Each structure stands twice: as C-alpha cells, then as structure tokens.
Image 1 (cartoon, rainbow, N blue to C red):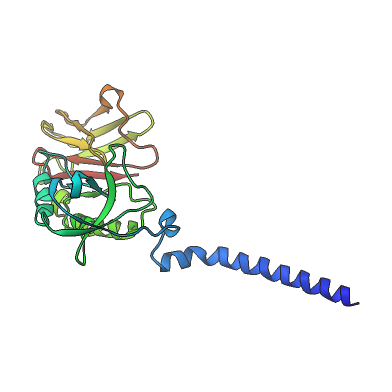
Image 2: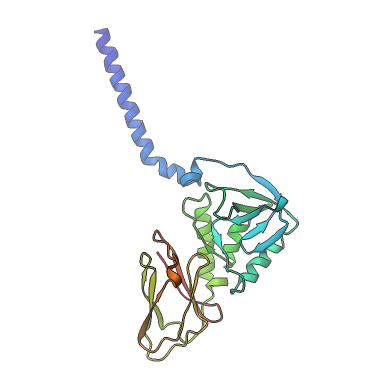
Length: 257
C-alpha cells in the first residue's frame, strides 16, 4: 500500500509539472513583452561600451576610438547627395568629441566589419531620435531589443510628414500608383492613372536600404515596368519597403510588405 501511495504521489507531481510548464509556455510571450524584450535579445544582455565620437562619416555611421567604425542599428539614413543626407549627418555632428555609450544586439558586425550598435548620449537614444526627426527609415528591426521603440519613432515622423516623410506637392502625386512589386523576379510596375502626362525625370524609387532606381516620363493612363539594374538583388523576399520620391526628394508613395 505504501509503495502504491508513493507511486500515486509521483504521478500527481509529474502531472503538476506538465501543467505548470504548459501554463508558462502560454503566458511567456506576454511576460516577454511586459519586460520589453524580444527575440534573441531576450536571451543575452550585452555589456555597455563607452567611447568618444571622433568623426561622423554619414547619418548612420561614425568613427570612434582607435578608428573603429560604428553602424547604427535599426536605421538607414539617406546616402550622400540625397535629400536629407546632410541633415542626418549634421544631427550626429553635434556629438563629435563627446563621450557616448554603445550597446550591441544579437549581431555584432555587418559584412563591412563595422560594429552594429545603438548609440546613447547621456539619457538620449540617438537611433530613436533620428527616426523621430524623419531623417531615416527603420531598417532590419526584426528581433531587435528596441524594435518597437524604433518603429514607434518612425511612425511618429510619418504621421507628422517630416523629413523623408514630407509629402510631395507635385501635380502628379495622386496619379502615380504602384501596380505590382515582384520581389522574387526583381521588378515593379507603376501606373499613371491620370489623363495627363507625368514627367518623372529626377524621380527615383528606393528600397529600405541604399538601392535606388531612376524613373522616366510616364504618359497619361499608361504603366511602366522597371527591372533591377544588372539583375542586382534589390528587393528582400522576406519583407522590404518601396519609396517613390519626386525630383525635390519629397515623398510621393510609400509601400511596405
């Protein structure tokens, strides 16, 4: 009888463990969210690094002590000579010569051997501020520690229509529509749905990164398909953005998938 009772107690204890594990698995995502952690960042806390910002290379890349280059995580600013590239660079230049704090995430370096980091100055989160000012778009934010903060900052600038989100005032702004984007075959088709010609000289299409494609004249009620130049991989099959900017660098159309 004693052995039977012990066996029953073991079975009950085992079943309780199974039930508790089941409950934990159900509520773990909620716990994870409430703690402000997600993905790989939930598993590892990386030590903060102190450095001196020696030189601003562009709006999302800086040089610190001993010549190391830092690429800011979760953002992409306009390339050199593009609209708002100077504004994003000048934003960072105010911190040259100052002590900053760096924080890494699950990926340490990019393909150019630059360190991927969040940048803080005192209590200011500079990656987030650049997005709030509309001087960058969010970039590869999935599973980042500050993913939601960065996306919220971008949405704020988008709502206010500032920086790269400033709306074009061209008479063709409501004519141009994206008819199709095929990420696998690397082409997109735009449509002029108005009854007049749209001169798109100087207009360009951009992805979430640094790739751009120049547009041309689009006659009334016609469409034009653009393939990737030199069969270059531009559109990320797992999700990307498509921006259309006019000849003044103002936003005509934005599409995300």
